[in-house]
Image (tube, rainbow, N blue to C red):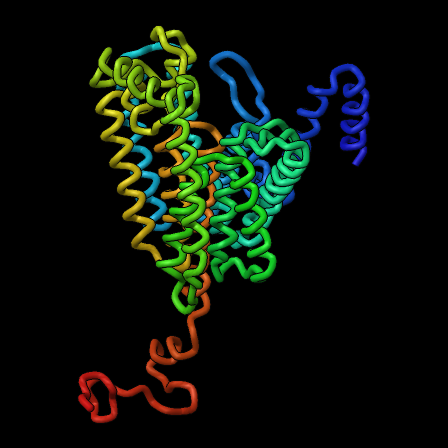
Length: 445
C-alpha cells in the first residue's frame, strides 16, 4: 500500500510538469493493476477503447490509441486466454497468416520503414483483433465486452445525431463531422456505429440483452449513420441487415419489414452518387474517386507482381499521394497481384468458415465481415479502427461459441449422462435399443 501511495503521489507531481506523460504513466499503472487482479479484464476493457481514434506517435509510426490498447491486450490474451483455439478460430488465423505471407513479398522487394511497420500493423488489425475478441468470448465475458462496446458506440451515435440537429437548425443539412468526445471524420463515425447497429439488430441469444435496449441502440446508431451521410457505411449496414433478416438464429423469427426501410437508404445513396457524377464539379467525391481509380492502376503497372509497398502514399514512392478508395485497388498497388490473391483467399476462406458455424454465432460474424468488405469497395479499407473493430467482434463470436461448447462438455444434460453410463433415462425408463419395436428409428407410420 505504501508503494502504491508513493507512485500515486509521484504521478500527481509529474502531472504538473508534463500532464501527457503523467496520463500515459497512470494508464500504464492502471493496466498493470488489472493484469495482476484479473488478466482477462484487459481484453474486456479494450472493447470500448477500440473505437478511440486519437493518434499517438509520428512519421511512419503513427498509431491510434486503439492500436496501442489492442497491441497490449493482444499479448495479455495470447498469454492468459483459455486454450486451445477452436477449429474455426485456427482456420481464421491460418487464413490471415496466408495473407500476411503473400504481402511479405512486397516488404522484401520494397525495403522502407513504413512498409515494414504497416505489415505488422495489418497483422495486428486482423489476427491480433481476433485473438483479443476470442479471449473475451472464450472467458465467458462476451456479454460485458459487447455491452461496453455498444455503450461506447452509443455515445458516438448520440454526439453525431445532436451535431446534425444543431446544424440542421441553422439550415445546414450536410454530413456531420462530430467533435465529441474527440474529432471524427464522417466516414469513421459512420462505419463504426454501423458495426454497432449490426450487433444490436442481431441481438444473439447468447448475449442475453433485453430486446428494448438492443432495438433502441440499433435505431440510435442507424440514425447516426444517416446523419454522417457516409455512403459506404449505409451500404455496409444495409447488406448486413438483409443477411440477418433472411438468415435468423434458430428458433427466432425476424420481421422482414426492416427490408422496406433499407430501400430508401439505398435509393438515397444512388441518388447522391448520380447527382455528383452528373455535376460539372470535377472535384466532388464521385469524380475524384474515378480519377483515383485510374491513377491507382497506373501505380500498379509500375510493379504488377508485388506492388510498390504498403502505405506507399505516405512514403513518397510515386508522384501520387492518395490512398486508393477501394480494397482491391489498394492491395494491387501496395502488394501487387500476389497480395490480391492472398487477400481474396483470406476473405473468401473466412466467409466460408464463419458461414459453417452455428447460426447463433456465425450469422452475426458473417454479417460483420460482409459489412466491412462492402464498405471497402467504396472507400479506404486498411484504416486502423475500421478494420480492427469488425474482427474484434468476430473474435468474440468465435470465443463465445467455444465457451458454450466447453460448458456443455463439462455439464452434459441428464439424458446424455444416463445413456453414457448405460443407466436409465429420467423417469426410470431404460433407453430403447436402436431398431427395437418401440423405437422411432426406422419405424414407418
